Length: 570
Image 1 (tube, rainbow, N blue to C red):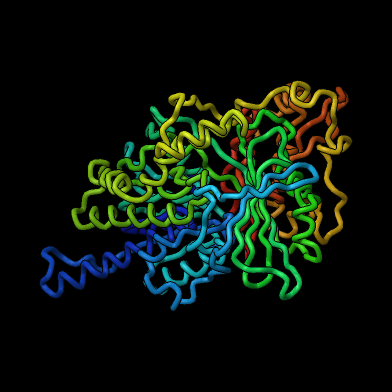
Image 2 (image 1 turned 135 degrees about the vertical axis):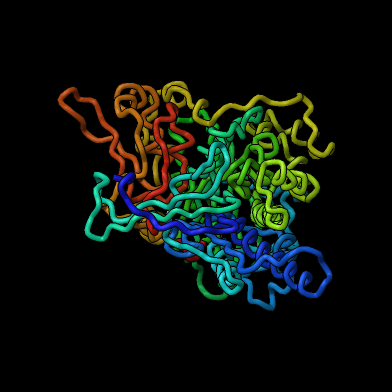
């Protein structure tokens, strides 16, 4: 069908794929650079010709900017100050300024405050923000400066001339479950671009294919990830001290490495979250369940007493760091932000790194526009710029962090201390990494005969609709929606693997690790085997399934534009 569709073609100087903080920062910076260039050319301060009517676009699959944006989020303002120096006067949505730090170790019923806050957990001078609010604010600035923002458009194809990226195609809208056009059918657009900048966030579905085709991951460590879930809890007025940033280690995680965070805001809200490494051997890993259990701990329960959960979300974050970064450029394209694995997982921060990477890519795109040269040789200056920026300085210091901590808290304690003293050097050399999908063990080897829902460690606290929720009730808080009569964007490669191999051996990890109840095993045929049912309309686009399935049997692709979560608070 697609071969016979007439599609409108639009020409752009630069297209940013994804409407997150990296792309928005890059688009704003590129517009500012072009404006300065034109002013200096007209005033005789710079030789050359003006760049007339620059066409710069940001393509976002959510129905509005910020709708799919989720983060911790404590933000280092260094990049924001470069991009928008008067951000406070422009009413940047800051929830609170970080003013108090603490780190606790939790046992099942006790807590111990570490007397001296480790340097990575010191946050004074940083800001507690809602990433969805921040991105909506940046989106308005971008539009005011002439950036074309296309919301509700999923980028589902990369356009090539040979191996040169020359743009993208957006997905068709108005298709039924079988891929046939409905009465509201709307063909996707062809967006031709001199340079395409991929800022799709974690596990970008387009850049994943670009990297495979162009070999941009050759010689790099595998991508590894962490899964985070979080809630916003509204507390009674006047009961919350704003600006607290508290991290905890230990309980409730027992079979996986990870930790939790608590941030407090000026509007009496507590942001409570949990992050778990996806290279866990545990087939029963369920961050949503662990977050619910966390709220029963005496220390946490006392802090949230009287509150009500008003928002929920989940996402993955890249954790491989410096050694997992792909080649950042190729003919006609660059990659930025989480798509480039630019997250400091030691400090659990990536917003400022994403912003700066977008700005550096914008500077490279501007130079390419002036030269009219968008080859890899021209765009490789982006990597040089990144190497000379605070991005490398920060990421290189933590280049072994995730790899070391994956060994477990006890084994990694001395190694992490050595890295802290030496600026990131490893006492044992490079630690080999493997895909998260390859780490899961047989359920019986990890849990013996203990069963999900029957063992206290593998059971949800009783949901009450106030502080405790089952997954479906949590999904409701995300505002997630997809057209039920649209194609399933979660592509299962071989259903027999789920029934014949994965369920008997691993007890279907996707049912547990998905934070949105997308996957469930239901009665199958007369053979008595269970089959996997995919409730794709629940999907909140975290992409854990694409990463953690032991058989890499699930391919996350972009759904119809406009579908997915509608984050407001988180």
